[in-house]
Length: 575
Image 1 (cartoon, rainbow, N blue to C red):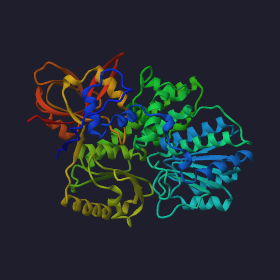
Image 2: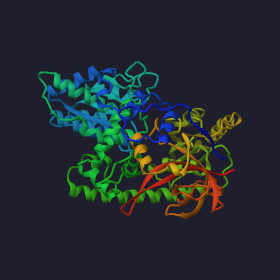
Image 3: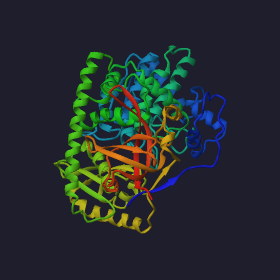
Image 4: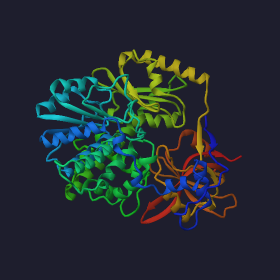
């Protein structure tokens, strides 16, 4: 089944703000109007966000108490440990907070991250006990802990104060920490619920710098918070939180900071990926840069992302990045092998509304990636598990793009069968004994069957209809300036009607390079169909042929040349 294409287009006219110099493309105005930006004040705030207009960190509930306790720890020469989640959000928050604390004058700051495969997600009581034995009296969590009652209670028993910073939604009750700083705890009125874990850590650091400046007994530092905006940007873009308000202004400045970074590890990876010497986009970070780092924690090959983040030796960085790329190649091969096996196992799959597959051959670090691939191939929710030697399956679930359902609700219908589960509506995790898989599948079948009986069309919302003649370097400069794009402010999606596909060429990885032209052949363009689905491949039969295309505009950097290409999201035979 294909997607329903729905336009956001608006009849409103955009009032161009006085700060805009030069010609303002009509298509950019239409895109902004389609997203509800028409008044000049709204457009100006979107295009020219100011760091000075960010919200005060003290708006966050618990912030004052957290600052006082960290200041007291400095004066008492207490041992502090930052305990962060292993993903890139937690790692980015750890890196920025540790860098900031050292810059403010703390002589030494420990850090700890649980291993993804051997320990699993969470704030663990066993780790708290080990940190206590090493003399730690204050633990600051980053991106983790809001449901960790046992670990927080154990810390309290041992006399360790936990400053719990997180952004995830709490359960029915909040852990009894020394203080909790989480914009998404129900009683916090900061309006900063869009921050990721690294974002909350950054606001703690903002508050700390001011607290140290105002406190007569604490050292003063002229260190600039902009120095850690590269970390903030990586965490925010990889955790897919909305790019709105403070997130937007910080990422806009942070992308510039990351492009210019002097940090040896980050610089070496940017160089390896040929991402230096040009402006970085949020897509560069989320699609090309971050997955290489994420593969480190997925595979647990010895190097972890935090090692790359904090490295300051260029020679060591180059060697480490070679290992990063080798590790990523291993991840790619494991993922490819697993995807092939998964599709073979699903050949006779009996259920029409979802797929479930598990194998002893699936590496636990890539099950989420396999699930994502299966949603693209089958256009159904996918549940993928790695079977351990103990008979337990650790898995990930994903929803197809645009589908309105909730994976957590689906699994909740079988919660008595699951050892644990959780996550978000479109991406979740689970653990189940292999012996319980059959009844689990039956529960899922009943749930998704009910949803099918009340179907909702799968929709893709595009911004405006455009012509190939609209696409030029002048438009692209404005297109990039309107960014950064990401969750909550997606990259503009354009509808090109009656486009002629003149040729197609298969690239490595199964992607397709297309040559397209307008209906009379006056204007041509390059297009890329990335990881085409079986439906899209069957649609694209006639070449040359006439098609309607939904696509994003992007720069293609190749052999020292910079050209515009259309990244195709979907296509249909033109009527």
